[in-house]
Length: 78
Image 1 (spheres, rainbow, N blue to C red):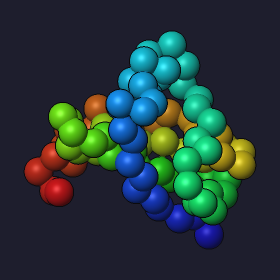
Image 2: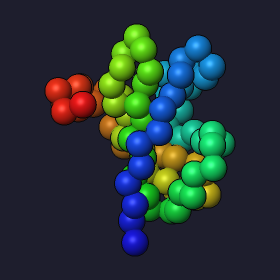
Image 3: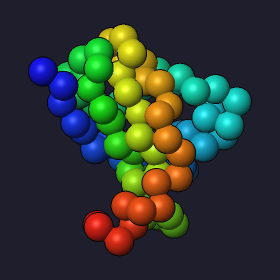
Image 4: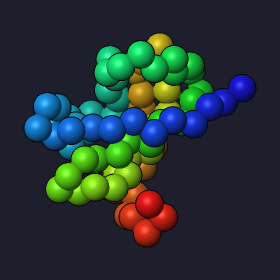
């Protein structure tokens, strides 16, 4: 069964924006998440953005493929 996750990304610790500029897959080794292939992960960028900025799909283990960048539509829902 597909699960949906929200995880935070702190640009002071990991520059996800820079990585995704040239790649569409990232290994996510943060925390004790139990991601499964097919799960959807929303990335919440901490301040200064303070919003969900990426939607990703888990493609294997903790590797995620970018689905959509800059989800500005989420800003009003949070």
